[in-house]
Image (tube, rainbow, N blue to C red):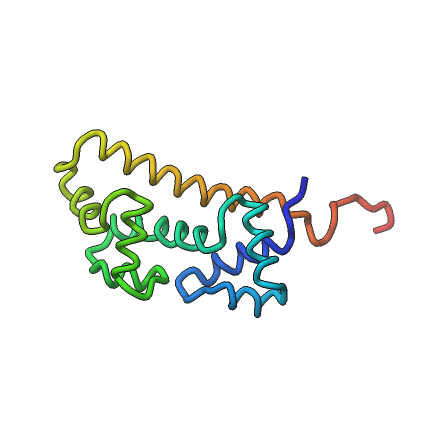
Length: 155
């Protein structure tokens, strides 16, 4: 079974523009489909809404930056397509289970959290990774634009 070309194009567009503002209206203008059609098709194919996919992808991308840089939370939020530290922190807490500040502290000191909390965070990060992998797998099942490769005896 092949992946839907429109959904693949939407995923690629989102991935390419993940650090910029992306709205459903941007997608409507880019792909020339009705907003409800795009939203319903994406949800049907990937079992996640476009907005959730964008937020999950942005949070997932920010995890590495939190781990390897000393950048401020605001800079990390802006670098990953969020337009306010508050919304970034809210989404981070919702998806990871703790605030980005606490996550950064946890990474640095590896303490101050119960095993239950650590397990919850790890499970949430695994889930974010699964969403990312699901999109990559979906893209890999796209029917080749050039069709199947065949050998020709008429070279």
